[in-house]
Image (cartoon, rainbow, N blue to C red; front, top):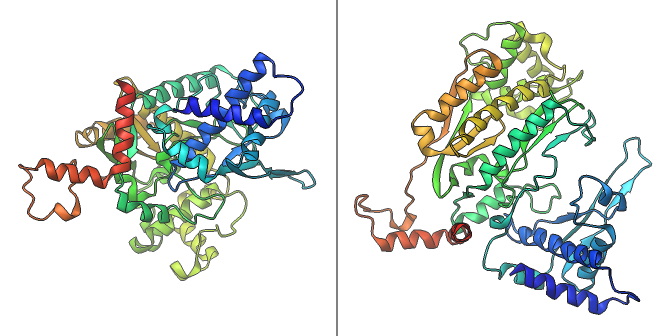
Length: 455
């Protein structure tokens, strides 16, 4: 188990140290906790998709006196644990830096990652780190950023305390259930490709231990942005979301049709009309491009520079021409573009998302938010209950109706491809089911570890 590995590594580090005095009892406790803290992060990284995500550690002494550091950690014990594990050859490291010479000082924290010996030891533990992942409810789950996207301190008000309380209810419900992605062993390579370039520092990882949410606010205000982040399912590429399971059951995903256009027209006191707000720009063929342009223009502030995703060859026109097409198609609300409306609209949709989740928490039912869509046990989708909750929550916040669309409907039984021919659905053999389990070996191990932990 992990606790035994902690003790072993502590002994090995201490054997290398040339201390004149032993640590105090409190510092020894912090030292052991620091090793466990680092090992836990490395254990999680061993099971990310793709594996071996680089971990981060603060080597700035001031961090350990801040509210962002776990109280059990201390600067010197953590430094001893980190440097000791590095000296033992258990981890590789890349030291961070901070450049104060720039007008906007910036830098990177130190990173570390597994070497082979420790990777093998952690993979040999008969469990999964996500099973043991628990939220620290003593920490703020609300994050406030200023207009430069820098996290800033804040003092709680009745409003923020209520938001934090609601989020704790949601997170405690998430932790009572097991959310996973039922991907075949043979599908893993393609999933990793879909997550992007493995060498990129900012690539997306699926870390199943990230099972709870935070709310992130912007512009130094608690009525801007506020969307829910931090959970692993939000990093799953859209093409793979239909593989999400909750307590081993298949799921449906629903989202709001034309979410932000409906909001903007409502807030402006204008009529949206019946024509699709995105297709009316360049036709159905370029609907997705028009959608991205519409939302980029809402979120921009005083600038019409093309966003990084824009490609002239995709629509055979320059960005300024596409902007003009959007303005022409949405002349009634043309004065709302390029005024940084995105964070205001996202606050409304985050309040709607909170209402949807809280409604189902009362019945101990999990709702997984993915921006403006929701994933839930397939029964809630097929019965129409999730759709009705989404409609009602939208009305409660915006005072008007909106359409809801179903994104995915999945079959509840998955048969291995080689066994699909001539399968009689009313007489599935045990042999066929066992072969199916073998195709999902990693998924099955995780699910069994979860249910074993519940007994």
